[in-house]
Image 1 (cartoon, one colour):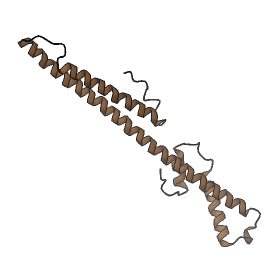
Image 2 (tube, one colour):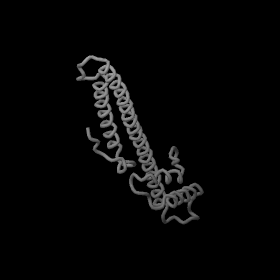
Image 3 (cartoon, one colour):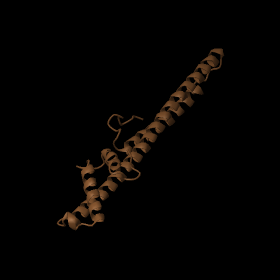
Image 4 (cartoon, helix red, strand yellow):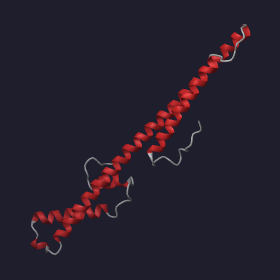
Length: 166
């Protein structure tokens, strides 16, 4: 079974590609295990002699080696599956940070907008504090990162969004 993806273009991208690669490697591992079984049993070796027995011993040895290759393929499949899971978790954390920051930013802008036109002296102490906090949030966020960017984790930490500390 040919492997249809290269790893270099996938890291940080779509975890389904990593899942596909893991699935392909597991299927390849199953094929290698079948080949190892055929090799180890000496399939097709029908003669009986000391030389034939020696040959079968070598085949069993080669079969064990092929099985170790299968184990390495399955280990690689497990590593790609784990990487896909880690990537999904990171993307979820980024999405949650982005959502939280955008909500906080919208609230800050609404606060600023609601207090526009009121002189500083006319604002209550609570409103002055709300306004200062809103301006601080807008300043700290600055120009928001692109959608889905890992930078959202840093922005969330800079505005102290709970649970998002990079």
